[in-house]
Image (cartoon, rainbow over all chains, first blue to last red; front, side, top):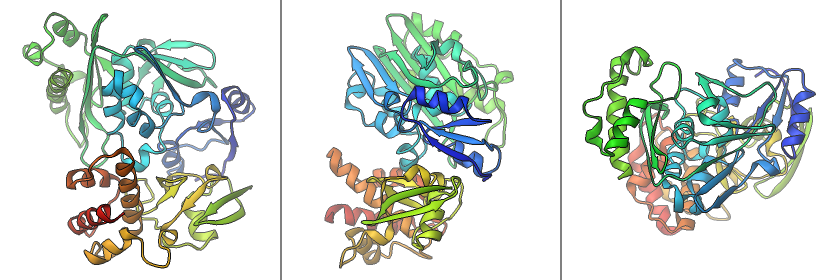
Length: 265
Length: 156
């Protein structure tokens, strides 16, 4: 790892100021992606601004069906939150299957969302739940936030402070993990509520997380796994690698979508 | 360089470290506590698991400066006069072959038993195997590792 200068931010405003004063600074949350990336010398920020203890970026608030999760909240905290589980168990189940227990004790929702790894789990949840990504300067709808593989609508120096969403009446996440890395080969989050059904897919698309609008239309008229039988997924838009080619992933999208719908009940 | 202070196995320690120093390197090279191992160095294997403020974390994927003011427990800190029930269970069940992954297995084992007890959930064999996803034994001796954790869960 190249050398770097570490700063601990007290809150989001402090982090923004530390970041703006750095030559080539990066936010450090749980570091479960960033530290390995720095160790591999694929990233070499001059400065690290640690937001894991930022007071206004932590914690969980559930008010009625509205859920707000601070960006520095760990996967383990989301997985174990009885308040969230009472209204939206699907996101707790998703969090409980990210990485492994030690990673979940440190990795954060804000870090996962900001990184927008094409095989990460949270982006699918954010997109399917129609979440709002809160930053230190504005609010961004999930539909506008995820702009492609490892790419987001965040401006330079902009900091995610939290995410919020309305718990759906029904929701489930079905993930087919890569047996070695536990990243999603394909993960499908289905959420259904007053505003209709949304289906978001991670791990499979060649341009990162995406919504399957044809599946949404089919589920809006009939919310059952069989409603997806007649649909086909275009392999041309799928990732293809040594773990699975695009035709395999296209099939997996449909299989996992049906499992998610069944899981949502 | 930054001065970090933390409690490791009940003892206050303080030292100047480069900001890029990994917690595992600080523990092994500065504190000379070499029970915490570096296996893969890529966050996969879990040989480096320690407890940070009571929860299991991979010390190869964390900066020492991030652990400033933290309370750290390593494999050297789990036994009192007698072996910890988890260590005894690994001994009783021959829960190791070469032993390289064992410190991480024991630290993860203690963490999972503590969590399941706190949540009032039963730590059965399926749960133990799921919980061990972040700990790799390249001798593939998982069967006796699972038996060991299962025994310790009943004794802790």
